[in-house]
Image (cartoon, rainbow, N blue to C red):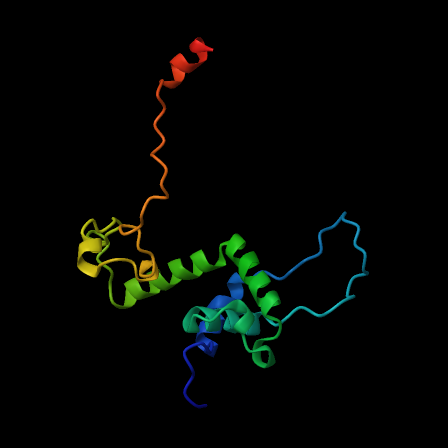
Length: 162
């Protein structure tokens, strides 16, 4: 077997993922329009998982999934949402962390996250004016000959005078 691409799921990985995925079942007591077995057959779970991994690894949009390889992009996305609600990806993440911790060891006692989520107050001085505003000359604009609006009487007193 040749080298796997980054989005292809190996047999070893699939052996760990497959037990987490539940099969779709018809709910008893509900009235369905179609009889059991009617309509399109569900997609293979492995092909769906490969499609999800493809989107996550390549960063492409759901609608850009190769239809020849994975099938309907909207179906793959529907499975993704369903599996997300079921918590499959969280369980997969936890299982991967546990396996990595056994292999390499994770220093759980000391963890650190670094980041900055603030506006840069001096950014305007460093980069200059917004390029989309180049054609606008607000500082050079002449007034239209009107005086600025300034009421002669404050708003509270105007009503009393009438």
